[in-house]
Length: 372
Ligand SMILES: [Zn+2]
Image 1 (spheres, rainbow, N blue to C red):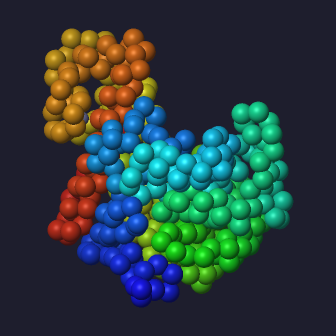
Image 2: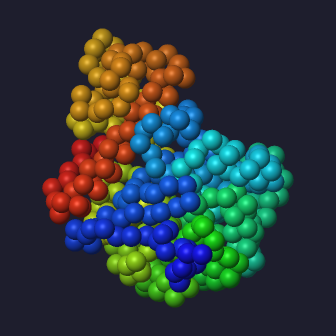
Image 3: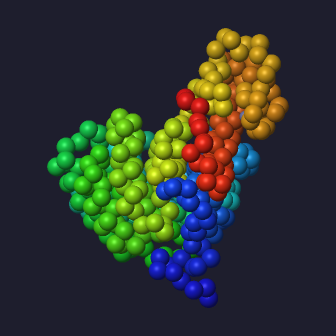
């Protein structure tokens, strides 16, 4: 029987920090489905798949972990169905680690379709209007039934802008839900992450982080950003929060995905990221390259025989010219979106690898990103 750490995880599943460069950390987050080298980017597979990619395609991009969404999976196909089919790994065919978001983001993004109360939140399904009830305990249990590697607590993501009073009130509810989620958590080979809210108010962020740290979660997320605030406000919220989170636990910045924002947050000591941006941009023909953002549908690429990015080693850049991607995407051909997604995710995962190598060699200050 392996020895248990305070968080309930066995010692060989702990989060190990291998190197530091300033506040940035190079780490290894072990899970029952593989080890995640951090800082890491998690592609978003809301319904269990990154749009356009099967599990083997996703693995080929170099992704170590996939993010899925409890709210959406609860509506369809339903937790019962996935559990009966052996859990989310068996259901999706993705064998690597999975993190599920709890539905707290949908409290914000589907604000016209939900009713909040002290005990939880009732959504009106965006599909058929039927009511769906989420409580802190129910959300924990549903993620355990899915068999995910990292579960997120239910939280209330407030809108922006929001008054200090309203942000404090939303935070009080989130903190109460955190205590209930922690009490409902039985540990085992999974992690439960807390989510720090508090909008753009320093006192709320710091108080929330301190209270959640005392509850001894397996990891800590910075939530409530990327909801319309200015870039400087977002970065301040990250700086205030990251600096007071427990040093020995993974930190996850939710939904922030511009390469410049990722690099900033890594320098504050953040370890995990997710964003729909690389996949969504790909579908719109916006390709990230080391030379800058390429609008591949532009007429200039109609006859371009070069690769999307000469310095990219992805299968798309090795096999087909820009002209082909431009043709497919201008024609609305599904394959165009798929190939563009493969390239963009590959680019992001290469960027994270560069960041990890730079931290290991103490040269994070030299890492640059090409402005989108
Ligand atoms: Zn490529």
